[in-house]
Length: 632
Image 1 (cartoon, rainbow, N blue to C red):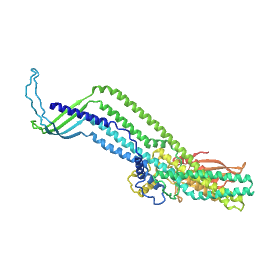
Image 2 (spheres, rainbow, N blue to C red; image 1 turned 30 degrees about the horizontal axis):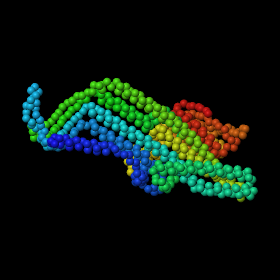
Image 3 (cartoon, one colour; image 1 turned 135 degrees about the vertical axis):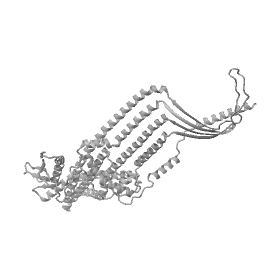
Image 4 (cartoon, rainbow, N blue to C red; image 1 turned 30 degrees about the vertical axis):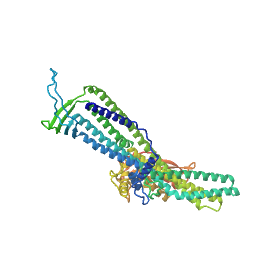
């Protein structure tokens, strides 16, 4: 066998071996996860879920809970990582616009001499003996600089798109931050209400069980009529069922709060006893609210960035259809000793164009126009959804305030009834059982009151959520210490939340303090109570109230109650605003019916309703010049 045939045999055997190895590599069978691998993954995840968390050292305030949620909440941490990833990808994309500089070096070898002969074209005879101009072993080096105008333009638009993708990630992070704040607001106040009433509920439920036993025993012994005993037992069981349901609803909030803060299961923590922040008034300038929402909502801003990305994509596609201009400079080295010059530089300019692609320009432009229309339609649909959310959130807040006022008044009434029942308890079985029933109702009213306050806080937070307002510090991600982060959040919430809300809804009626004067010919204590109710209602609606006889406008509220007629009385409030110069800016009247003997709670509710009803008139009077008269 000749040397050439041997080489061919070796080459054939090599190809066969390569094909066998390739086919073996393509025949990989599916391999499901083993149970120990799953256990290992679960154990690792459980360690990472609660890793590097600062221990809870005391009762948690709202700011503390929010700080833990923003620092350890996994959803928010994911958005932070996605934002950082988008920023990194944008930094990488900027380098694609740079020219290319390719450097290479290598070594080549062959087992025999290269070379050849030359054959004449006309004579078809060999004109040279076999010769070689290349060494068997040689080294190569190359440094190539190239720049393409088309590649630069495409990379430029890709970099712009990458920058907008980073901004989209930031808007999504903002949205998650706002959602965390909203969810925390809902869970925290419910959990705090459950914590405040937990010990009372446990004690009362034990007493209820004893009372049910006594009632059944009294029924058996004939101390109570069967109908009365059964009605009492039914009332107690109904109240207990409602109490357990309300208690569970509030206590579930503590588990939700723990999940928001990513606290390990089983960790015991308590919430700080802090006063309930006053709830602001209902916004009335819906046009301004809608404008703010359309400007600030993260989803709409994301759509704006998506529109820019679509526009840049259209430009990039059109640019890719244009002719390309390329510049190449190539510095080369070859150690071949037969070369006259072992080192040389190649350079050139090249213009190229795919003429068939030019036919795609109309189709590309049409697709871009369709994409733009689709983006606009999607943004308009989202804008309509945002406006609907704003209006619904305001209506829910309005209803939540009414429910909270009713629940608060009901709780006060039931508390007084429980006090009267305890004060008038006797040794009779039915008297003692009535006290238990009354106290159960009073505690249920307290649960309902705390639940109504938490619902009002939730509705208040929904307005923020629907507007897309940022009330948290910009550097919230920079604080590494929980205590420092909590202080930042506390300062931001106490300083900016109400101010941002007031500015957003245009509810600052006047920077000049407003004095309030109430005139009532009845009980002086009732008059003082109603004055305080009116002042609190004005504060909730963001009015600045005067202290210590400060000069300025004065709101005068006069209550007139008619004589009893058909078991009721007609009540009328005369509400007017007197300017600092003594002129009257406006007068209005608010009427309603009262019982024959109205108590203080009824008068306070009547006063609050009149004050809230006259808020729009009061704002108009503070801005108007001539006297205005209105009545209701």
